[in-house]
Amino acid sequence: MERYIDAEELEALREVVAGQELWRGTRGNFVARFEEAMGQHLGRRYVYAVNSGTSANEAAVAGLGLSPGEEVICPATAPIFVSLPVFAVGCIPVFADVDPRTLIISPEGIEACLSERTKALVVVHLFGQPAPLGEIMEVAHRYHLRVVEDCAQAYDCYYRGRKAGTFGDVACFSLQQSKHITSGEGGFIATDDPKIYQRAVLYSNAGMPWYLYDLEPPQAAPMAGIPTRGHFAFGHNHRMSELQGAVAWAQLGKIERFHAARRTLVEIIEEELHDCPGLRLAHVYPDTRPNYWAYPVQLDPAETSLTAAEVHQLCQQEEGVGLGYYHEVNYLEAVFQQAQRERRTPFGLPLPEEVRYEPGLCPRAEEAAKRTIPISVHHGRDPEEVRRQVRALRNTLKRHI
Ligand SMILES: Cc1ncc(COP(=O)(O)O)c(C=O)c1O
Image (cartoon, rainbow, N blue to C red; front, side):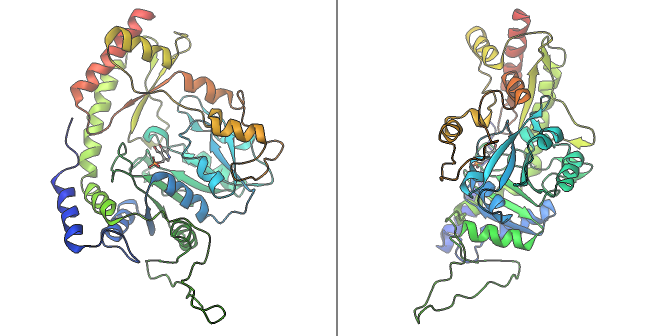
């Protein structure tokens, strides 16, 4: 295991402790430095850091200013941290089918679940594969949908030479331990739209307008002669702490080194598996440059009926090597099944008749999820350990195909 949290992070943390301010306060030192540096890194005007990627997803959707009961299209195959935030802001997640080669939301999938209440979509650049943004943005424009780009797994990957996270109305990122850079837990949104930034800040800061970027906050007014603090909207406290900000800032300074380490792991995987029976390497869309968070290989249904779960188990039994995990379909999780039974969201909003969360809803997603094996290419992984893991996968498949 390569050390990837080290002297730079310690030095920044020491500075925070020396300053005796562990929270971001109305401005923030390291948190604000991180936001500014990240804005420059990405090429977006406004960045707001929060305490997790899930909080960033919530802030991004809240930033769109949707009304309760409006619908937000989400990909069927993605971590549930993408769809639960839609419930949290009072909207209805509607699941679109995906391109089975990548598990990324497809333009046809989006079109198939539009209603008059559809206002936005979340495109997830899953595993660090940039989505085919040209087609997706075209569909979004045609139907006047706002676009959230979920880049939790996709720092610095490119579509037509431009970074993913700079195409939609707002992007959200995670800084959780496994991500391209980390502060343990953490996340942020990035946008060029001051209104989205302001709504996201209010939502994540209990309605208090602690804006940076010289944006004028409204002033609290006394009510019945009694002072008010100035809470202008509903919100949570999802603020990032200075401890997280210091680590995130130090990590950003090392991001290129981490990317290079992950590229080496991808080369090993492709070298070891390019001619592996029953397996397809990751599909890469034209005009895209992925920056993998996990490298997704897929079992080829023309050559094997084994599922990813079965291969994982065989590999574990016969080679003593695990493959990590396989992939999930949001609406099959118990929380969505409960919503389906009760015909209401966890916050009590009725589900429209056409909105279903049941097996068979997105057949391509369900089928492809069963045969997708994402292999972690975390920059902290030992290349030799990755080589052993993928050789074990290859040996297992050779025995069973
Ligand atoms: C695609 C995606 N979106 C959002 C999140 C939420 O991030 P966090 O775990 O930091 O809350 C994750 C987390 O793993 C993710 O993979």
